[in-house]
Amino acid sequence: MNEANGDPDGVARAPRIPGRRRAADDHADLTALPAPAPTSDPDSEQESRSAPAQGPDSGSGPDSGSPSGSPAGAAAPPPGPPPTPVLPTAPPSHAVLKSLLGAWALSACSPEETQAVEDHLTECAPCADEALRLRDAVGLLHAERDLDLDPLLRSRVLENCLGRRPARIPVPAWASPYDAETARLDALLRDIGESEWHAPVRLKWFDGERPARRKTTVAGVIGHLLTVDGLVSTALGLDDPLGAGAPEVAPAERTEAYWQGSYHPPTRGVREPWREQSHTLIRTVSFAGRGVADLTVTYGDFALPLRDSLLERAFECWVHADDIANAVAYPYDPPSGAHLHGMIDLAARLLPAALAGRRRAGLASPPRHLVTAGAPGRSLHLEVEGSGGGHWYIALDSPAAVGSPDHAVAQVAMDGVEFCQLVAGHVPPEEAAAGQDGDREAIRDVLFAAASLSRL
Image (cartoon, rainbow, N blue to C red; front, side, top):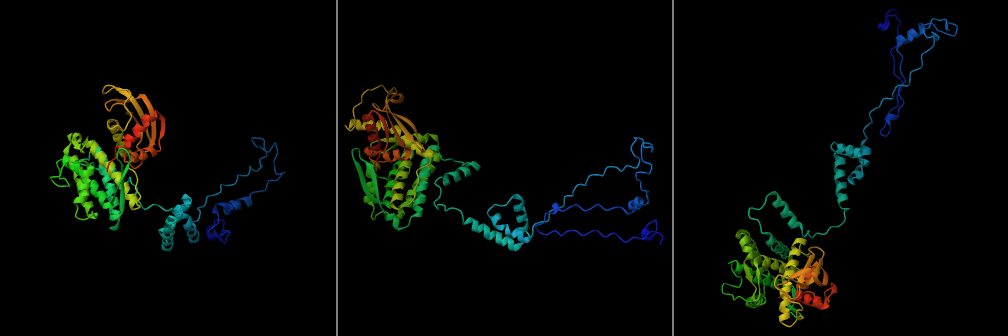
């Protein structure tokens, strides 16, 4: 046959059939398969058949005419093996991907496995449902968490909101502790039940010589806060909760008048007027401007500027909120570190005057070295540890003297919350767990003066 199958030599040949190949399953490593043997070209194979064979006697040797002097018929060195082609890896099967769902839910898969599983979940509805159930089950494996909100959550939310859009009329920094503590107490009151408003509460303070107690209820405590906050309200020209004609008396007398003037024991109805009054105070000082901070608030036998008065009211609100929380078995945390530091600082600034008052009443040792006003004098180093702590130097001989580390004769170290409990009269000065060093008489006088800052 001439030119059969398009061959110019006219030789008919059967079409070439490739050899058998191994089948790849789901777990086969296709990159490890041997490379296919190179196929020969039919034309070149024909030429190799027709070329004469060159053996040792076919003209080879030094005189064969090779330019290099090598045998003319010498074969070229065989070429190296061809590079192994990198074949694409087959995607994992449905069964393999389904077996990885548990590890995927626990975030234990490699990045490649995670990508393969997530791509599969977009195509396979049964596996997607199973993945959701496994993820929900993993959520149940987490440790138990307290259901009570973080006490700093409110401040963080407000800080974030104000950072995005500052308040047009901001609350003054010196009024922030009162704003925070009244809000925390109000959150506690919203959580308690109707019957818990009548739970018994024992108010404790130090009357100058010995601990004192007064029994009331949760509602009675809120009534007490309402009437004493009324002193700040009247100083700002706002309504007095005791009425327009109420006499200017000390906080204890105002509280007794409120309790005795009620036709019925206070109930949860007292919460709304107390909360409305605290909101009104915050709004008033926010709109009043800077000058209002130095306005005088009278507490009967002593007075404070408004900035210190609201800080004192914040301290009182926290102390009595803790009394309520103990009465109804409610968890309650101390104020934030910055607010607690301000409360401790106020108590430290009031200590020289309280010590002088006790000395006039014959309850403290006489002064040892009087100095002129504003001069450094004999001092006690008060070191308060923990959140809100710091270092203060309390003048011992004259309230007008300046505390100085160079004139320190004693040192007292206490935890911040424990010091506040002493100032609130909840811890007797003899039982205050304090690190003491130096003049024992000066230490005793300062601890008793701190306890005497408390009142009903």
